[in-house]
Image (cartoon, rainbow, N blue to C red; front, side, top):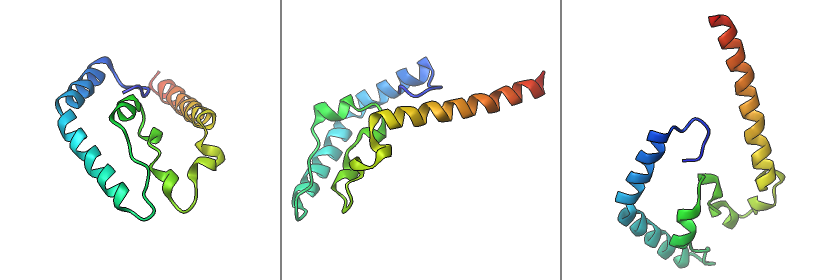
Length: 104
């Protein structure tokens, strides 16, 4: 909901859908936690309070339980993600300037 380009109406729509679908999200979370505990070795479980705080899908730590710990990669740090987001926004801004100049 906090991504660039997400308008007020879309954010409100997403919030409303999440609120109405919270029972389904709870069920999916319970099923995930059951499956995570059934694995050998057991994976970490997720808590509802933590899930509702996530603003981006990238915040989910599901990749940490793979054979290779992704959280140790340089691109997995919050500062690196912010830098990448800023870089791609700047790239898009340059493209937008070119398109606007063509329209003018």
